[in-house]
Every structure is written in structure tokens, then in C-alpha cells.
Image 1 (cartoon, rainbow, N blue to C red):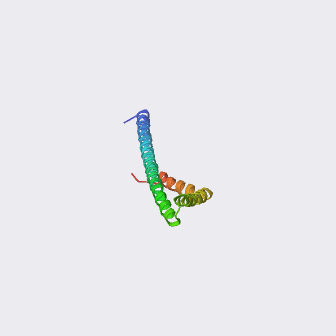
Image 2: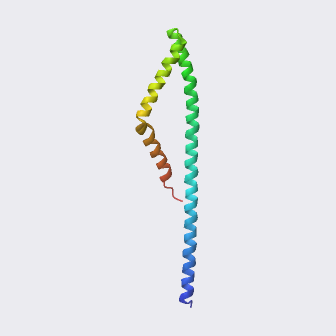
Image 3: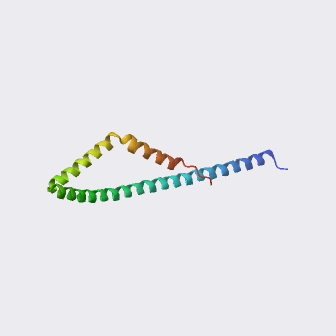
Length: 117
């Protein structure tokens, strides 16, 4: 028959092993969430840069088109610049509802997403 000390020693060993396993699981989950978050942020940045490039090219084309329509290319560029300025002001004034809240809720949903292992 095992003594009380042997049983206690085995119990402590099992608790230590379970704790080590739990710590390792938390490390792996944290690494996975961090990787997913960084990949998401990187994809958002890439999409943003491609969108800005497309918008820039579209703006030049629209300015030339409007300039041809009003028979003054400089005026076409000023009209497009004014439109972009108005859009910029609207985005700045409504940035909390248009950008900050959706972006933070999206990132929080990515972080908090519970997956069973």
C-alpha cells in the first residue's frame, strides 16, 4: 500500500504536468491569435494601398474627363481635388462611426473568437 507521502507526491506531479500543459496551450492560442491579427492587419494595409493607387489613377482620369468637358484641364483637376477634399472632411468628421467603431469591433471579434480544440 502506498503511503500518504507517495500519493501526495504523485498528486503534485500530476498537477504540475496539467499546469504546464495549460500554460503551453495558452501560449499556442496566444501565438495563433497574434498571427491571425497580424495577417488581418497586413491584408487590410495591402488592400488600402491598392485602393489608394486605384483611386489616384481614377482621379487623374476623372480630372481629364471633366477638364475636357469644361474645356479647361486645370479646372477639371480643381473640381476633382475639391470633391476629394469634401470626402476627406466628411470622413474626418465621422471617423468614429465610419472607421474606429467598425475596425475595433472587427479586430475584437478576431481576438475573442472562441475555437474549440
